[in-house]
Length: 217
Ligand code: S3P
Image (cartoon, rainbow, N blue to C red; front, top):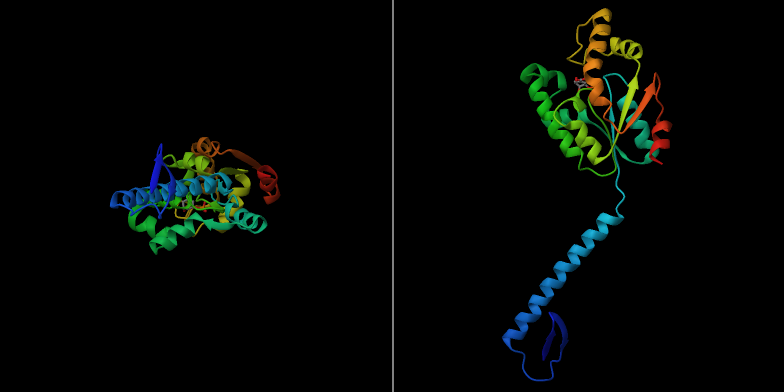
């Protein structure tokens, strides 16, 4: 017989007479509730004990986010994602192509979409494009889903690094060294308030991965 006490199945004695359909339904109901509760418990244990990490590296073009990201990923045994490369692979086009064919506005929408996607990945180091933190609430999204580091490299270093790598970057393509200097200074002034929302700010001409590792220990 199946006896119930305040919703709990107490005993099921098969030798005390035939089992009615009602009793079987009750047992079935209890099993469903039990499995459901077990599922919730497993999920909570998973949430409490899982120790996933996401690191976002932000900063102006040429500040060394990708180089730093690769070094960190190796040291911390995490997966490195370059957000621009991730976007290019998802949309089967290069960043200059997207800028040329759809304009910056559509590029920013795509950038937001891929950022949302990687913000749900576990144990990743994400190097974002220089403009990513400055559109929508992207920087808040990064701060809320991981540890965000701003690599604050001096403008003079950015200029010398970008002079040699300006062809693949639509925003600075074709600029002379003087134009580049003025462009970086003006753009940096507008972007700085967004970059400075990062949880950690690392300043210098050469920022080392060890500084990031020290901060997250
Ligand atoms: C941009 C920076 C680029 C790339 C795009 C726009 C920007 O990434 O996302 O060309 O607005 O600063 P890097 O910072 O990796 O060069």
